[in-house]
Length: 560
Image (cartoon, rainbow, N blue to C red; front, side, top):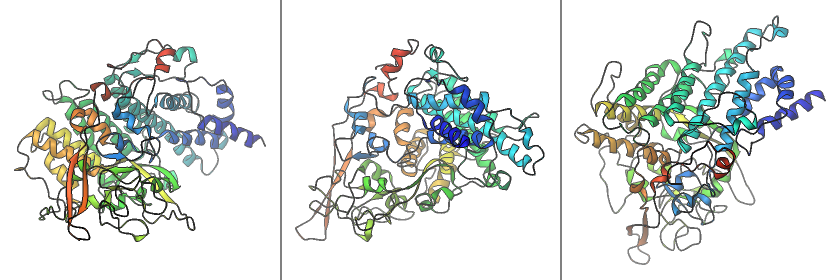
C-alpha cells in the first residue's frame, strides 16, 4: 500500500503540467524524501521527463505545424493552425504556447539535478548488480542535462530572449527572473551537451553512444549522438541570418556548426549511425529501429493521424493536412529522367510518393486516389483537398478505420536523424567556404555532403556546374531540406531562421480535370492563393501576456 501511495505521488509529480511559470510545488520536500531515494522512483522521475519531448502528429487541433507554413494546407477552417498566417495571432491569443510547459519540464530537471543525483545506494553495495545499477543511475544525470538543454532549445527558437534558470525556484523567485539574450541560451545548450558527452578525469563515463548490454540494451533514451546532434542544430540556428547579423560576412559561427556536425560524421560508424539504405524505412511502424534515427518520439499504437489525413471519400478518412504544390515542386527527377508535364508524377524523386499522395496513387484499402474535379476524393466534395494532394508521409495505409474492423499501429516521430546532420554540415560549410571549399578536419565539401543525402534515393545529384556560387548551393540545400525533412517540423523553423517569410505566403495548388468528359487524358492547371499574410514579428512567437503580467522583467518580442 505504501508503495502504491508513493507511486501515485510520482505519477502526479511527473505528469502534472504547470499552468504558471515555474509553478512552485509544495510537495517538493515530500517527493525528495520518498521518491528520489528509491531506486525505482529515481528512475521513474527521469523517465517521466521524456513526456515533454516535442514531436506529435497533432500540433494544433488535428493539424501539424507544416500547415502553418508553405508545406501544406489544413482543409478544415476550425483549426487554430490558420492563426499562424491569418493575422489573428497575439500575446493574448497565442498558438503553440509552450512557455509554461517547457519551464515546467526544466524545473523538474533542476529538481532532479539538485536532489536526485550524488546518491551512492550503499544498501546495494554488495549486490551482484551494483555496478550495473550505478552505471545506469549516474547516466541519468547526463540524460537530464541533455534533456534540459533540448527544452531550452525549444523555448529559445520560439521566444528568443528568455530567463535561464538552473535551480529550483520559489514562485516569488520565478516571477522576478530576468531574460538573457539568445546567444547566452545557445552557449548554455552547447555547454550542457559538452558536459554530458566529453569525459573528464572525475567522470570518465558520460552519455553512451549506444545503450548496449551494460545499460540493459535500452532504446529510446537520449544518447551521446543525440547531445552532439542537438549541439550542431543549436549552433546552426545561432549562425543563421535571423540570429546572426554577420551571417554573410563572418564565417565563425558557421564553422562551429560544421565542426559539431563533422564530429558525428567522423564517428558515425563507431556509433552505429548513418543513412538508412531505404528512405521508406524511416516511415513505417518500425522506423525507430533504423540506424538513421538518432532520437524518435515514441507515440505508441494509434490511428488518429490516419483519421486526420486519409483522403475524403475513403472510409474513416477526414482529410486534413494537404501538401502544397510548393512542396511538390521541390522534388526533382530521378537520375537520368526527364520531366513530362502530361504525367507530372512519373519518374520523380522517390521521396515524392512516399511523402505526398498524388492523383492515381494507391491509398488505404488498396484504393486508387482520384483527386480530379468530381473524382471520388476531389473537389467539390466537402473536405476534399484544395491543393490537389493528400499527405502520405508517416501515414500507415495498412490501418483500417472501418466500423467493422478498426485497427491501430505503432507510430514514432523523428526528432533527430543522420540525414539532418549531413544537411547541417552542408549548409554550414557552404556558408563558410562555398560549394567546394574545405579546411583542415572539415575535409568534406558542402556539395559532397548534400550528394550523400540525394544519392540514397537515386535523385539527380547536384553538380558543381549547377551551383557555381554559394548562393546557388544555398538554394539547393534549402530545397533539399524541404524535401528530405518534409513534415518533420523543420520547414516552419527554417523559414524563420533563414528570414524568408515574405517569400512563402503564396500557396500553390493544382486543379486536375479531364481533357474532355470521360477522357483518360488529364489537364493540370496550376495557380496561387494570395490570402496569407506575413509580418516580420512572426519570426518569433509573442511571449504570452499572462507571463508578462506575472513577471514585469520579461520584455515582449518586437512587434507584438
